[in-house]
Length: 254
Image (cartoon, rainbow, N blue to C red; front, side, top):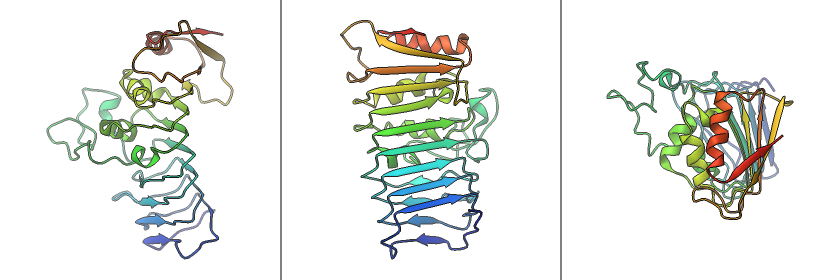
C-alpha cells in the first residue's frame, strides 16, 4: 500500500507462489507492463498510472480482477482465458475523457471522437473489453465523460460466458446504444443489474423485472431470468431505460 514502483516491467513470472497481488494507492506510472502467468487475483485501487502511455496487464490465468479508479491512462488488458469475475470502475481521475459525451457541441480530439482531427481509429484499439471476454461476472462503472467502454464497444466484443452483469447510468446516457450493444453481445446472460444515478450501496428505489411472455425478443439473452433496476428516484432518465427494457417484454414491479 502506498508504494512507488520504479521498474518499467513488473515481471512476476519467476514468482510461482505469488497468486494474489494488490496495489492500493501505489504509483506505477513508470511501469509499462505487469506480467505473471501464476497470478489468480489482481486488485489495483486508486493507483497512479502513466499519463502518456498505457500499461499492459498480462495475466492469462487470472481468475479475479479488480480495477478501481485508476489515474492516468486506462490500462490495456490482455486475454485472460480463465477469468471468472471482474470489477472495472473508471472515474474522472482517468485521463481518457471525451468532452463530447457531455456536450456534443464541444470540440474534442480524443481517441473516441469522430471529428476530422481524431487521433485514434476507435475500432482496433480495444483496451478493456477484449481482455474480459471469458468472464462469467462483470461490473462496469464509469463517469459519464469517460470514453473507454464506448470506444471498446466499436470492436463489438461478444461475452459468450457472461452470466451476471452490473452497469451504471454511463451505459444509458445520452442514449441507450451502449446498453443495447452489450446486451446484444451477451448471449448467455442470466442476471442484469442496472444501478442508475445512485451510488449505493443503499438505493431508495429497487425494481425487479419479470418477463410478460415466454417469447424472447431478438437482441437479449434467452437465458435472462433476473433484471434489477436500482435508483434514487424514477425520473425521465430512468423511465427511458425502463421503456427500452419493455421492448423485450420485461415488466417492472417494486
